[in-house]
Length: 113
Image (cartoon, rainbow, N blue to C red; front, top):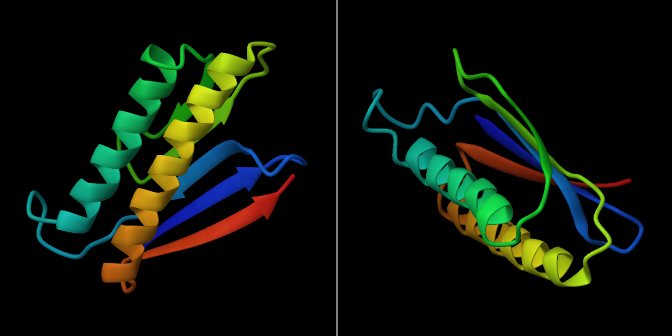
């Protein structure tokens, strides 16, 4: 099962997210839940870096997969922060949709910092 955790700061903004585990909803290469979560997370990281131009701390297990933690580093640029929050909220919404349809394979948690 994939566990998605979203970390929120005192202003309720997403400051980080963590994905752990494997969906195991299908054979390797045919796991649609894994594919959906992978596409959403990779697109979000790319968007945070390229579109919002935010600095990130990214930790992942490239060998075995099943682990990704992304933390936004502090910035004083409110425009970049707003772009980043829009991308992160879209990511969270996308994962909620996946979890609503495939609740046996993904859970979501919110943590306040």
